[in-house]
Image (cartoon, rainbow, N blue to C red; front, side, top):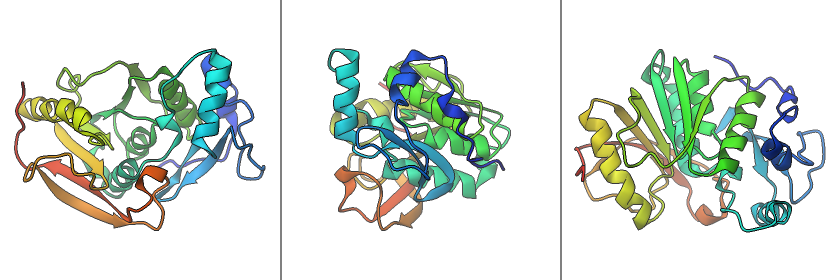
Length: 244
């Protein structure tokens, strides 16, 4: 199993978007700037290092200034609790992905995709609707020495692009998103995919639809929105959802 090598080669890039993201990025030995990213070990998954925001609001403001207009919130600059749990579970149970094709839906930073690659997946695709997230995923994958394909699109209208395993961290964070995700999960299951979700208990799945595979305690989950939560879980569907 490969882990972060400490080599700062992720900042060597020909992508203008990556150069913008990684401007003034720092590594553990350097003091970070508040509006920049810092290469950081993930609390629950220290095998993986990510470029994460020191202050996501200040980072967002800088990126919007440089872009000359509004941008989506930089969700990719935080290691969200569901993703941390899911990445930890995949690394602890590599047989779930070893030799299989994996889709990491709404990948954000790419944490779960990187964990799947480290655990021996035959091929890993990370998906997000935000082009900045895709740039961050590629930078993080490079920093961890992994090759990950990326797709920038909303894939929830399909059934998982033929992937044998679908991983989705923090994909049920509000009612509108859950309303799109639950039918997607049903379609993926109906064609035989293995589906695993990571969620800190935000309460947007119907009762009885998901069963818990593992629950983790964590002193900090790395996101202000989940500051009062000290547990995060890995879940799998207990029944097939509606597919409409």
